[in-house]
Length: 436
Image 1 (cartoon, rainbow, N blue to C red):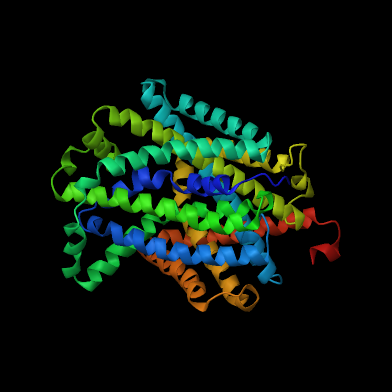
Image 2 (cartoon, rainbow, N blue to C red):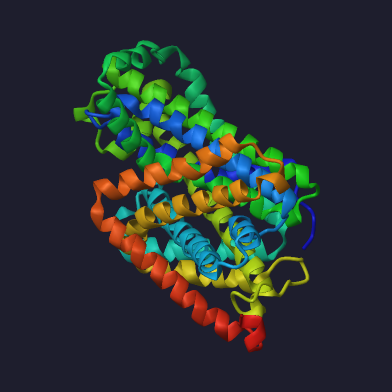
């Protein structure tokens, strides 16, 4: 593949994949919860700490085992004898990113129709626009990694500029007392509330892995390490500042919960209060940019995972083909087709979000465990390895405890991905020795 990505483009891929639905809706949903909303800052801080530890493990493993397969490749290298682990993490990443691409494309359609007052056209138009968006993203990715990177740069720059404008103009509204207020709360209340917020918002921290997927197309391997922490720093800072604005304005009566149309629209209310009526349009444009960049980053990342899996004969070798622009064209097209198929199951895509979030948590824990096992080779510290391994498991356990049905879905997910993986791998291998 062509090594054409600069540090800016690599960091943009990470920021683009992370800053999407979390900052525009999920933070508002948690902040509006009367019992736990005031703890949203601490939830985001906990997620930042855990994700930094996971990012550390990714950075160390990518330096030792540079591969666009990212988490899949690391687990495959360290646990080479455990084929079910490789199949689970590979196929989980594939389905998770494909569903994310479909979901963001659908959300883009809703925002676009809202801006142009096209809501009366119905669900068919929503899906048609989403399919067109996926098709355009596929064409951009097929045209070369440099073009994809430039598009991601522009989209990320636009949405981050708008979010930073809102934060800077609203800086005077930040209230430090809302942070001190929770100090007197019982420990059990704090633990429950923080874990709830962490489990709900962790999805917004998962996109940094896309940075590692770019390692084989980066001009320097050092760009990946810097890109991981740069994208995490930008995304987490914006999350924290937006959450702080939300709870400050709610606490001081600048936002009234009974007058907010929907919990997910709280950022729009914040923007209107700070900028004025034009803020609604500005935020909608930022949301368009955010969902488009997140869909683009998801498509890019998973196509590289499929490319790496094909080299290991986990999926058919045809997905290993590069076009004249140096990109895995068949993998990109397959991800596009999968995303389009998932668009027709919009409700399923939304429900799949919960499950894929848990699958990602388990994958991150496995990657951290891999670095823990290989820490002498990667020259890694024990502490971030343990935090990266245990942290996601705690959040996942809490989520499963709150909604037991997800536990059965997760078990079914593991069984299905491993079973399908074995069947496809068996067909992909040329002989019995290679399969073994």
